[in-house]
Length: 342
Image (cartoon, rainbow, N blue to C red; front, side, top):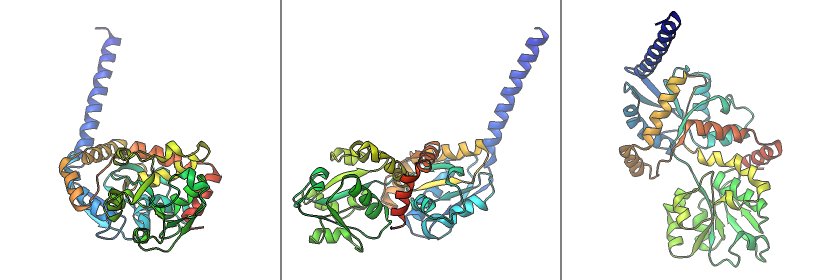
């Protein structure tokens, strides 16, 4: 063996040994450690319930099986938790934040936010929301095209300006399709108002629709779902032949929904501080990906939280968030105005 080939062989061996050592160190890092899960809500909220179920199962998917403890930081839209993870927590892979979709809507609409969404280490999202636009079947106009020139104005029952399913999305749809529609805010229970005939249409999250009285009205043929709004199609709504927003919205308006979709798709985001070691970020991302497919975890979530986990991997989250933040000013200004209730 020549000097050159001996040197090359030694170099390759060193790289292999070093690579194995680095991987072994990464795998061994969490042994005996405590991972703190900072839940951005009070106890018994949806974010908290899902976070605590995740905490019970997550260690099974992290090499070294660390102890997972949950700490609540109750503040609107997970902002306190995000501030802590971004500004206070060490970037060592031992702190994870758990938030809601409000984290994104608040971050892009409020000027006093103390973190940069594009710099978090995004680990996973394990529940995606879908907004539905639904209406009574006895209203004289039954399609968006018909509603654009309907002789009778559609009354849409909503809760508060700035809410995603009852405010932001229907306001956008009203503009996009030029609907002859009045948004009537202030209802605590728009579903009941619709059943009574006080309003003709409403919105909200799919899980609320399918888990309550609206699903019964759908089965009875008294209401229909006109549209599903999210960054990805919902299989159950596809079976019901409900059109998907990104297929029917005119091309010139799609950028508005490219900014809205991440707020829906990333309804239960998990994130770590900026700049944690890449090997530990990968361990956490892989752990959450495996968690989302864990049969025991899924069964617990369905029983306790009444939702179906749905994974958006960390790298996909990062790409969607950066696309959301890169939309033209006229697009972001419109979304910000609606989120602020203007």
